[in-house]
Length: 187
Image 1 (cartoon, rainbow, N blue to C red):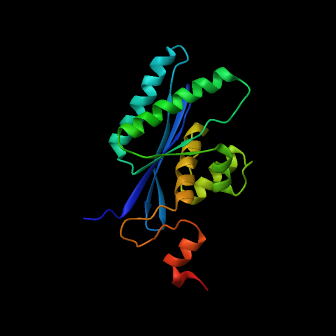
Image 2 (cartoon, rainbow, N blue to C red):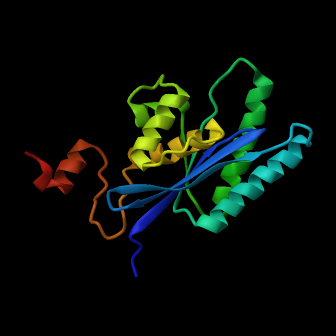
Image 3 (cartoon, rainbow, N blue to C red):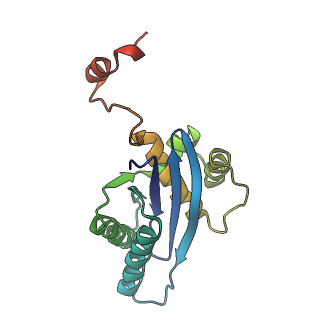
């Protein structure tokens, strides 16, 4: 039996708060499955926090069985220590996804905002309001990290234009290949 929908898990990595969001794509319809955060104690050892991140991502994968995994890339800041910590958090989340056999896609914060709102410099509130409109939910999340993660998942869907099995969408490698594979779409 062919699968008629896809589930995408989006992650907003963090060493104190990690956001996650899951969406389901069925045909041209996109719906919210779940979103939330993993809160980590700053008092915990850094390696304990990394282990908890890995466990949470693993648990999300076991529970929801996503087909795709997308994560926000760390933005480049001036604090090197913060960047290293964030990179480690991202690394263990990626490791959990790869261990489960999922391929990984990474998107910059600017690319995510551009994909959702059309403006790469949009604020978190603008992104969240657009997600509410796209996914038809009204409640405001307690933590913006969860809507940030949801934005990663939606961005992945928009960027990949993920074909649903059996729909007959052909992926092209450049315009010339697209034209050869889709002669009926050229006007």
